[in-house]
Image (cartoon, rainbow, N blue to C red; front, side, top):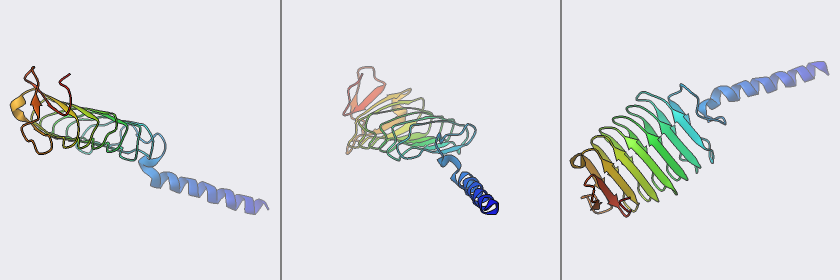
Amino acid sequence: MKCLVARVAGALIAAALLATWTSGCRASNACKPGQPFCWCPAGATCAHTCAGPDCALYCANGNSTCALNGGDGASASCQNAQSCSATAGRGSTIACQHVKGSCTATVGDGSRVHCEGAALCDVKCTGDCDVDCPDGHCRVRCADPARCRVACGGLTGGGATCPDGTTRTCGASCT
């Protein structure tokens, strides 16, 4: 009997170790400090901080709240989440398609933000950026409006330009 119990216990420990090794970031409390990539489990709330071009948050599993604080080259996938917030540096990509609440993004030079079908994307570009907003509601503030490209469905001119001269909107108010 002792031998059987020892074998079962050994098998359970081995299975637990194997699950831990193979799950990586997919465990509960998915975002691990210092790791460049975080995969947020279905329905979870995840916040991730990382640096470097491999910095990424995948939070497109019907998640509640997703947040990324990343450096240059960071990416966040928040499609279909309840809300998303992202702060990222140069050359970053933020995907907020069909976010049900708000998507707030502050991005650096050469970045892209995708907001198709979003309830509200509030984007701040500190340099040159592209914002896709077909069938969504977007407010885009640009450090230099001449360097921001905002696509509002079939309109490439950026929808409306607000009185402040630095904000463009697609289906959203200026404030």
